[in-house]
Amino acid sequence: QNLSIYIMPGFRKFERLLSRLGKYKLGRSCLYINKLSDVDEQVLRALIEASLVEMGELYPE
Picture 1 (spheres, one colour):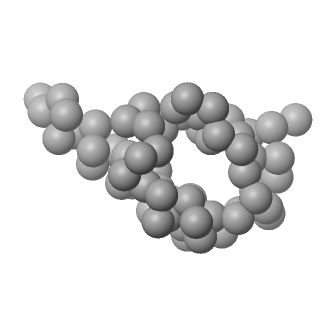
Picture 2 (picture 1 turned 60 degrees about the vertical axis):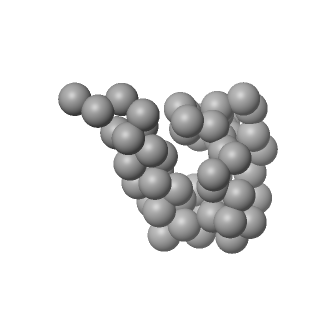
C-alpha cells in the first residue's frame, strides 16, 4: 500500500528537494511513496512545508 501526498502547486519548483528525497513516484500533483523508510523524512517535511508556503502565496487569505 502506498502513501500518497498531494503537492497542489505541482513539482516544478521543488526539483532540488525531490533529487534528495529518495525512492518515490510522481503523478500530476501526487507524490507516491511505498514506505516512509524509502525517503528522507527531513526532505519530505521540507517539501510539504515549501508547498504550503507556495499555496499561501498563490492564494493569500
